[in-house]
Amino acid sequence: MRVEMPLFLRAAVALIAASLCTCSSLSQKQCLSENWHAIGERDGANGHTEYRITDHQETCAKYGIVPDMPEHEAGRQEGLKRYCTAVGGLQAGRYANSYAGVCEAENEDAFLAGFKLGQDIYDMELRVNAVRSEYDLARNRLADIDRSRREQDRETNSDGKRRERDALRLRLRELERDLWRADDDLRQLEWAARRMR
Image (cartoon, rainbow, N blue to C red; front, side, top):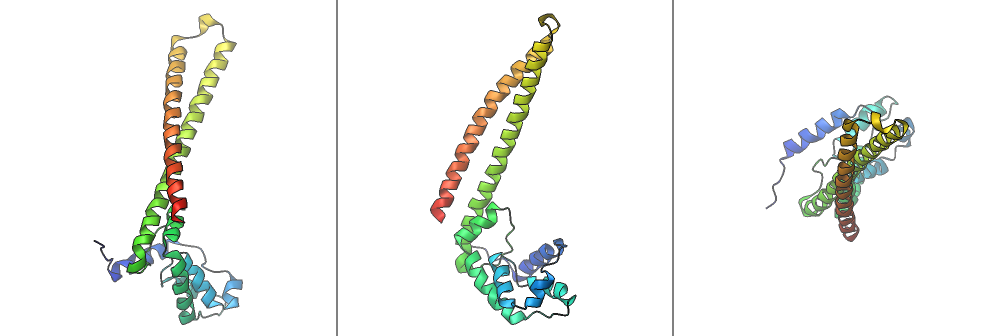
């Protein structure tokens, strides 16, 4: 069963998201071009709400330009047709973008399925990178211990270093297994993403 997000909640989410952006929404050149249909289409393809025009109004007011709101909205609706698909959701989720509830009910399920898969891929890529990082740190620490061991004579080599070296070797084996599993999970998710396209 699909739960519809109330309009006031959608508006609140959009306003909060818009307030977090402190950068200009358009350059002076874009404001002066006055191609509001194309600007709206880009905004829709990026999943922006109808409130995005407010950002453009503030930015373009500096240059004495007033956006053509109907043209912008017509373009945004066209852009949403590309965004509100499984592939659009996949891309948004994979790049850790947020979803502002802009898709119509008939397109939202496909979008959200792609969005979830994209988020899973993003999360798995983070996991793979974290495991690789930890593996590299452990491997480098082990190399440092081995290097210092060679530089020192065996009698001055402490039991503490030997225990640390043994623990690092064990941890490296665990990390190799974790990395193999995470890489395999990521390949499966990417395979599912390729099937979606």
